[in-house]
Amino acid sequence: MSFIKNLLFGGVKTSEDPTGLTGNGASNTNDSNKGSEPVVAGNFFPRTLSKFNGHDDEKIFIAIRGKVYDCTRGRQFYGPSGPYTNFAGHDASRGLALNSFDLDVIKDWDQPIDPLDDLTKEQIDALDEWQEHFENKYPCIGTLIPEPGVNV
Image: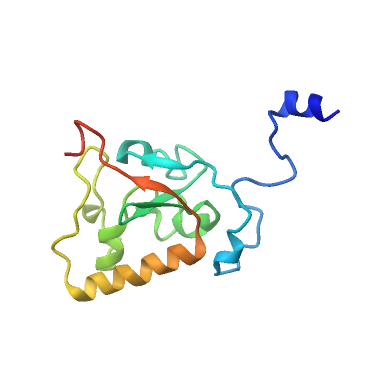
């Protein structure tokens, strides 16, 4: 019977929600991420990251300082109608450091990755706090890297 289930369902565990949307989402510790496998893992170009914005794909990925986090279970914050929706599918580092939700702090996928070398100590401290928050709440699933010939 398991052979038929694997054949029909591709070995996918149908009893679990791979997006994490049905979980309670109340835990703020890394324990909530243990045992759950990331939906996608590896390197992301800004172009590929941009697709995971909650609109084009149900999954929501956000990059901070080159690390990509699966924030799908935080859809109420980062999804299409959430207060941080501008960060979905993007490198949110500058916006988080500046505490700004303006679109002009978010780079398009065809622009170079922001080096953040002009941030003040206070802005870096704010970004450190945000990154710690993401580390504790969402699984890190990959790395944001420049796309050759595009983000240079």
